[in-house]
Length: 163
Image (cartoon, rainbow, N blue to C red; front, side, top):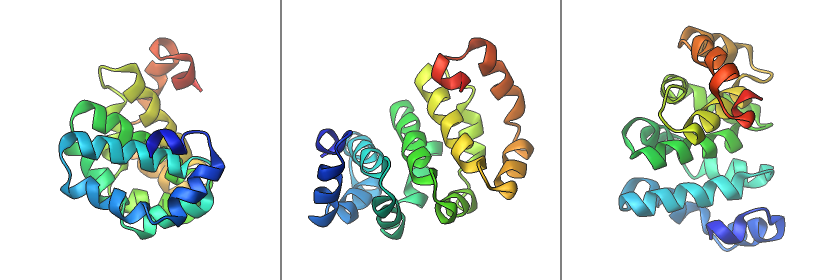
């Protein structure tokens, strides 16, 4: 499903209509480490530029287990959870507030100092989307200590992270 949903809006709609979102969210808490990672990427791709899927994923309860993966998942799962939260926050003010309320900001800030460029990139993008148009999130991100690692990414991060 993650590959079918990737950059294909028709498949994103079809997958959601077929009822895949609730079982994917369930895998975030009940699956093996590998199943969790695959479910995260499928949700990440389903949420990309699809506001209906963004809402459905959050209604299915995805935010708490995604935040949990940020703190307790394996390194790849943390990176991918940040990307999924990035897409859920994009252009959706309710999701931005819910993600912040669930405690995602501190572990996203911590991920900015990760060893992998992709993790830093996804964390920075998630924080960007959470901050855009949300003054409470901007304050919380600054309070969580994001400014120094974000400034460091300007010099050492990937081109995407620098955005």
